[in-house]
Length: 313
Image (cartoon, rainbow, N blue to C red; front, side, top):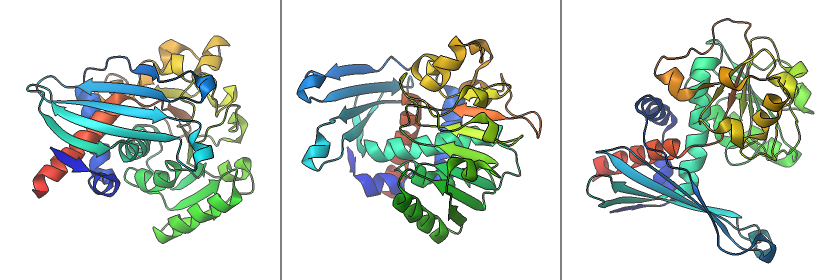
């Protein structure tokens, strides 16, 4: 069995290959049971919540990601989230690899957004706005550049220091990058807006989005979280990465309940990958991708890591 830590896992997930692996997995599909939520101790006692996320392809690989969330770790000087990924042979049950789950999650999240943009963003999209400066936000420009000719990146974050640090990183990667004084300033000329925050109230407003722009929403993965207001969805083409996104994300639950958004009109990446639904159809069309995360994406990434590691042996 292979044991691959953070650096080794990251090295085997270049975005060009990862976007391709995700595209293939969304087209092929896999078995996706509901994730299991385990409360190791009551939340009031500062316990740990563990998420168990399985996925497999018959005759292929079986993977399980375990995500442990410990809110009390902040007081201990430790990260609040840790995850690991185990990959097995789905036919024999033989363990194949132990991988860094945090790297799997961050890189597949950014790559899934880039894959969505390959169908939803204008082909000539060159200007990217990033809202947030956390782990996933730092990967978004590099990932989107795989699918679109991104040249200019504008960053806004609640922490100006973190926004400046990200701009410096992006400049080192060859982007023309700047910080924005406000979210509205960041969005004024953006072709793609990628939002990766933990916001609980809308911070992106539809009136700030340009005609023909693509909005990528990553942060709202729970009902109590929201990054975009109703105007962001009105009249836009909406695509999600998971069939249950409409019941998981506060970004979708509210607009659907208020009649702003028709749940039946929402497409999935699997439908786009299989040619059952189409993405962008006009240059002035506004599009939205809502990501909530899927064990399918984890499995695609883990299989890519395993293949890369096996090839080096």
